[in-house]
Amino acid sequence: MSEPLIPADWMFIVAVLGMTAVTYAMRACGYWIMGQVPLTPRVRRALEALPGAIIVSTILPIALKGGLSTMMALAMAALVMAVLKRDFVAVVVAAVCAALLRASGL
Image: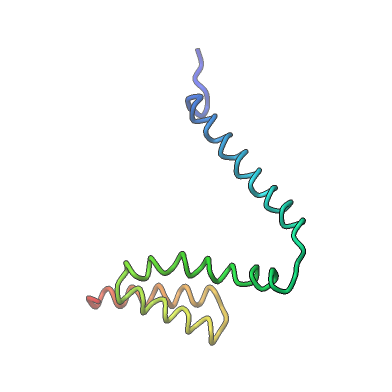
């Protein structure tokens, strides 16, 4: 009997296919539901505020757990974004800042 190229049991395959189906269904239903919602100025403002809220809810726990060096690196990234408006430069500056602060013992 020959072995398959990618060995996997049937429960793994069923789980992956199930997660794929649920992910697709949620995205498709989300597009359909938003197609039914009239875009009033209030709804438009709420949708425009979502990216910032998601970023803050993702970064805040990391900043609180990371300590002073993490908070200062995030502040540097925010400052670089405000001045230069370059994502990649802000990430590099934040990484260098965090590395230097951690190497100095903060």
